[in-house]
Amino acid sequence: MTDSAAASPAPPSAKAPIGSLSTLWPFVRRHLGLFVAWLVALAASSAATLSLPPAFKTMIDQGFAEGGGAIDRAFVLLFVVAVALALATAARFFFVSLLGERVVADLRQQLYAHLIGLDAGFHDRSRSGELVSRLTADAELLRSVVGSSMSVALRSSVTVIGSIGMLFVTSPRLAAYALVGIPLAVLPIVIGGRRLQKISRASQDRVADANALAAETLGAVRTVQAHAREPYERGRFGAALKVAVATARKRIGAQAIVTAVAITLVFGAIVLVLWSGAHDVVGGRMSAGTLGQFVLYALIAGGSVGALAEVWNDLQRAAGGMGRISELLNEDNAIAAPAQPQALPAPVRGELVFEDVGFHYPQRADLPALEHFNLRVRPGETVALVGPSGAGKSTVFSLLLRFHDPQTGTVRVDGMDARLLDPAALREAIALVPQQPTIFAASARDNIRYGRLQADDAEVETAVRAAYAADFIDDLPQGLDTELGERGARLSGGQQQRIAIARALLKDAPILLLDEATSALDAQSERAVQQALETLMRGRTTLVIAHRLATVLKADRIVVMDRGRIVAEGTHDELLAQGGLYAELAKLQFLD
Ligand SMILES: Nc1ncnc2c1ncn2[C@@H]1O[C@H](COP(=O)(O)OP(=O)(O)OP(=O)(O)O)[C@@H](O)[C@H]1O
Image 1: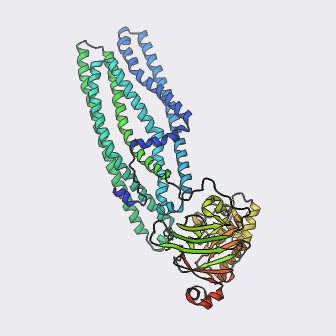
Image 2 (image 1 turned 180 degrees about the horizontal axis):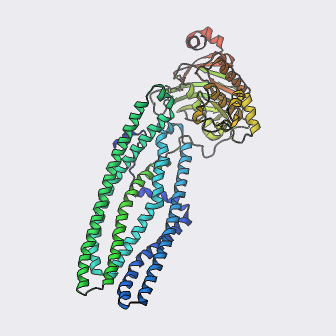
Image 3 (image 1 turned 135 degrees about the vertical axis):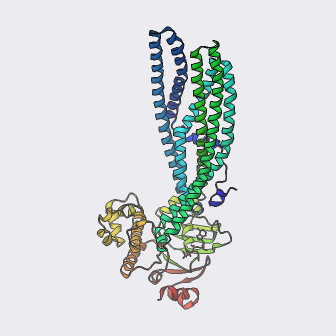
């Protein structure tokens, strides 16, 4: 295992040989028209390039010898070839650049679509900064490959092969000399390339590390500032960048050496050959034009080998990126819809049953989050879950939402095993109001409409009023159209909760999962949130992780959890009378 793999939570295990670029082909094939147009333009521009030297030879040998009209004709020919070359090159550039953009957009789209649907287990073990880096940095690398390097590689290969062929046509003896030089040049490129590939992957990993760090800390800027840890975080980011640059320096250095060696060898060989050719011309064994033509072909071949050396490295870097993107694309979704998902009854009644459920989180095999967990919630009933931190209350929600599947036992909704349902259909039947609601960087209206995208303005306004959010939303500068800023930075905790409640009201799902906020609200917000919640819970099956006495008192039943098990059940008074954990919790949490 390389040190790069050790540092990241999801080690990119497989090596990415240059062949992993072939996984790009399905994306290229979708734009076959562009691809073919590019190949045609490529053929035309290569042909034009290769026909320049003979035009040059004609100019020297015939033009200079015959003078006047012949010179004019030779120059007209040269100009026509140059114009053809220009047009073909422009067309080639156009088609292949557009192809690059389209392919990378498709790739990004597919990767994003895949990632956003992957199960909670995957997202628990990945850093979102790394995923974003796959979507941006690696995809960017591939854009440069498809949009230019791939083109340069193919064009250079064609011109190398074509010009070597023409070298033999021009002068077999000199060409044979040249052929000794070119493989000599290719060898170090291949050897250097192997090493480069390894270094390049490490270099990209280090960049991803720095990105992940920045994403995490910028995302938690309040926490950082509250601890006055800006200097510490600046230092950490600076150190991560330093490592990234040091790793990149290795790559750049290696690449520079490979390029220098390649060019020296190729042009060294050409100079030697020319020296021999010059003697042939002086000795009258070859015309000056033929030597000119040979020189041009040799320059074209040499230049193309140099270009190949450079893009070969780019291709290697991109292969590393594509390798990692492929790994992500091949990541299986642990929570997928069965081939023939069963449908929930319409309308959903909202009966929830946990049958002897046992569950541990993937990374915590030793620690059961739920054990022999049995719970039946009748349609329309409100059940409060209480228990100490880590008792498994949130886990109950995760299993209902099918973020995870239990290892033993069954979760049923309206009598149906949750595993037999399409997760999307199941989640449509559930509204979740989390402790810390997510507020997107969008308008208040769009944030609320996230609950049901088709809802019209009147429905949004009804939900806003029912969630007791109208007063503060009216006070915002543009009312419902006010941009809320990333993660709702411009709203108080109680206001964010009411936005989330309005969202859930709009969703109007038969089952409600409510994770009551623990953070203390001022009395006025508290009352508004409480009233909003009462509206929301009416007529729905509600499971609430309760932290407030008011909520517990209103519940039909209280379930006391500890270490993944249910330890007591009943009403507030019954449980208080029993003493035990509930009485303790009540004393600590509610009664003061
Ligand atoms: N994503 C996760 N990966 C691994 N372990 C987890 C994960 N989420 C929770 N756990 C563990 O599972 C157990 C139950 O956690 P859970 O979040 O369900 O408790 P809780 O009762 O909701 O606690 P709290 O009131 O503090 O939110 C805990 O021991 C916790 O450490």
